[in-house]
Length: 79
Image (cartoon, rainbow, N blue to C red; front, side):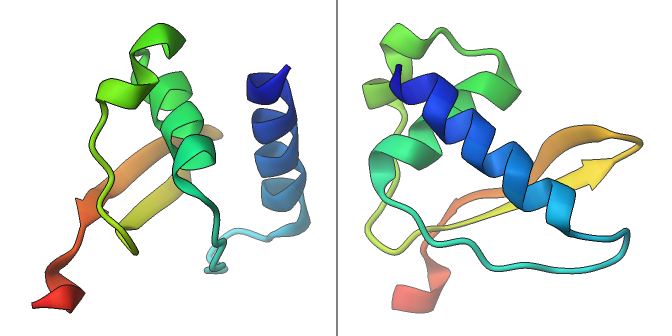
């Protein structure tokens, strides 16, 4: 299933990092929506209701072993 592939890939990427490191991960809208739903607790059936602008920036942080978003759908770089 798509959700499992996306979340497994994200967890693998995160496992490679060390505390304090910053990484850039580029993905398409479907994958970022799955990640948003999973972390924010939104049902997956609503993933296409979550707006993500083209080239939107989303900042994901791991704090105390928990993933949380610090920024969602920022397109200010386009202005």
